[in-house]
Length: 214
Image 1: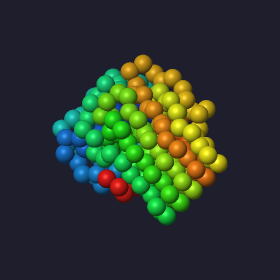
Image 2: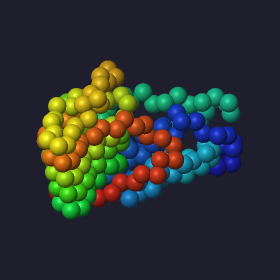
Image 3: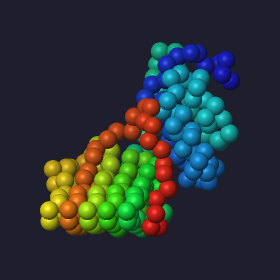
Image 4: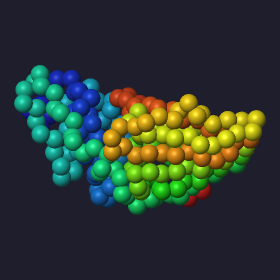
C-alpha cells in the first residue's frame, strides 16, 4: 500500500484525520492507551502521507485518498459535539509533595477537584472528552500550583481567589460556538492556579502520564 502513496508531505488536516481515527479506536476498545499514545505521537511527527497509513492499518476506518498529489484532504467535520456526553474517567486528583497529570485521551467530569499541597498538577484538556458541555474545576493550591491547559476554542471563566497567591483571571475568555465551557474556582494560599491556551501541534512531545487520586 505504501507504493500507492507518493512521497508527498502530509498536511495538518490530513494528520488530524488520522488522529481522529485513532481516538475513535481508543474509545471503541480497539486500542489500549499505550498503543494510542505511541501512534498519536507518530501521527503528529509524520512528514509524508506514506508514514501515516501504517498507523491505522489494523483499524476498520480508512482515510479517503487525496484527489491529486497537490490537493489537501479536508479536516473531518466531527466538531465538539462528538466529544461531549462521555462517561467520566476520573473525578479528581491530588498532589502532596509531588505531582499529578491528566493528559491525552481522558474524560473531564462535570466537577473535577484538584488539590496541590507543596506540589503541582496539570489538567490538559486538548485531547479530552467532556461529561457535559459546562464543567467545573475546583482547585485548591497551598504552597503549590495547578495549571489547566486548554485549546483556543474552549470558553474559560476563572472565579477563584488567592491569599498571598493568585488565580489567572486574565485567562477568562469566550469560546467558539458549541465548544465546552470550563469554570475554574477554588482557593490559592502561597500558590497559584493558571490557565494556558495551547494548540495540539505536530511534533508535540508531551505524552500521557498517570495521575493520582482517582
